Image (cartoon, rainbow over all chains, first blue to last red):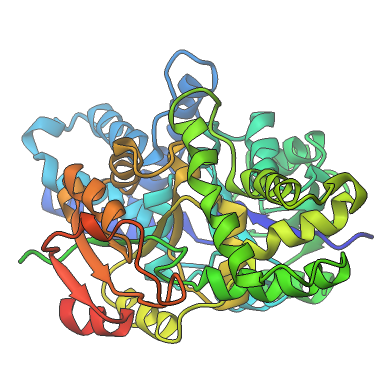
Length: 237
Length: 237
């Protein structure tokens, strides 16, 4: 198989563990507001569940491209209201800080070492729905050595719309077939393949705390398949 | 003085030495095509001289934003014709390779160490007219540890238009007054200051081989002034 010229990574779930990170930051928040009855892991799942509908407003054209930092803050307010909590009673500073929990996620244990190994061979970029400031802040905290932050904000288009993948290859000045998406999500990989990209699946069985991934049915025979990013480095190079 | 939240760097001339790098790659090219009579440093100066008029087509709106990689290839053809050389007789591969000399420039001796020191304190990003693929390729070769590649392509606007500076701050999610432009060019700093940014001048007396900079008259009293990027790190932190 041709070796990819650039590896483009999905980030949430593939490189970082959003569920544990959000639960870690939500727990003291929920305790502070007297809602220690809410399970912070369920809170994380519910918040993540509001992510696709919020992006869908932008994908559909009903709303112009809006950065994920802003969507995360809006969906936090939505989630709190759903639990009978009035965001206005809490105050913007505290809510802004919790919305930025998405910038403070920890990498899976293999991620940094795997990225460093891959980066020695080809450029590694993000092809994430995270906006640039979010992805940059996360990278600085977690030590993720991206060569460039691309994806949704660079193209102005949310995955899995076709032009988010094609636009990323275009910015890189390479053919879509020379770009490989690395993701833990079959739906993302299916869209990337439909756009002509190479595909690498990394299995993250704990992304949903051990529960079945919502897109498990989209599985195909991907170009590469590994259990870790270090394992992927060993497969490709 | 308030410490900047993010440092945004001009690249050509400020971080890398374009004149020596272009001359180094032009010399064997000129020899190969039997034009060893042309001085490669003068060739570099002439090529650089065609840079502002090419970007001006985009700034003025006569042409949509077009990546610098493409403008560099076009101005190379222009320059060759000016010297009576027919680009069609040379072939695209060789010309594309020479146009990519702008991706292979060496950093000034203090640049990598200075950037590493600054990056320990705040994010360091590019605010260059170089496109993303060019800037990324240069960074990988030269070891420039950018946190993100912003500037012209991220905003779709060439410096020194005001919105190239404001758009960069906006992507970063910070106020323009929290962003500091670092540049060796007074004209760039003047435009950044007019847009509300902080300013840091780094002196590069050898950028034009010791000749006076074309924008020397734009000098003002900048917020920071240093002889090297390592010196700047000592001044700010």
